[in-house]
Length: 247
Image (cartoon, rainbow, N blue to C red; front, side, top):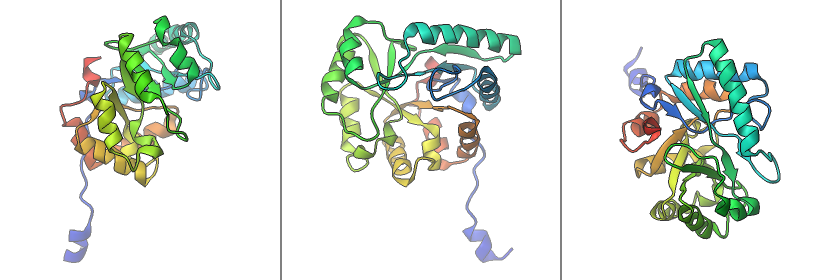
């Protein structure tokens, strides 16, 4: 090898150790109720891979959205019990719980006072926005979530394109009590360069409280394994900011 080639070779980091996280808090493993796992076999295959990656617990979070997946706590918890039974029978040494990923829409807003939301950990409430439309009343709804005793966790915050030129909006959300969740695969560039850039800015500024796989299928886990060698993956795991291990 020439000296030229040696100095131009991209440095390679070892795979980051995901076992320090212990818990994944954003995924779609309950089969047949949203755009995640289709069959129980799909679910078990993904959970075996999650265990191999170092996770010992998952909080799976099916979508709840009025115009798409009209799941209820009853549907999700029923699916969870079936999944837990299958995991036990398969001998996979991983704990499985469930919450939900709530879509920010009118139904979500008006239902907040009912106190019937599926949460995880210390009353953390996972919610997501439209990727197309910037929400007008987000501050009011954040205030309502906190008033009702929830701790709002905004899902895959780096993926909303309307904030890719407004990084100050991330700081504003955090100042209002919102915890931010980052998708691991955004670090690899899976969702495009602007999303990768936003992910890096959020990591550089210590604004991420939770890392999530947002796993829907085995393809996501294959990308995740490659992401483990990324510099920013190592950086966020060493940040001391992540709350996954407390769940």
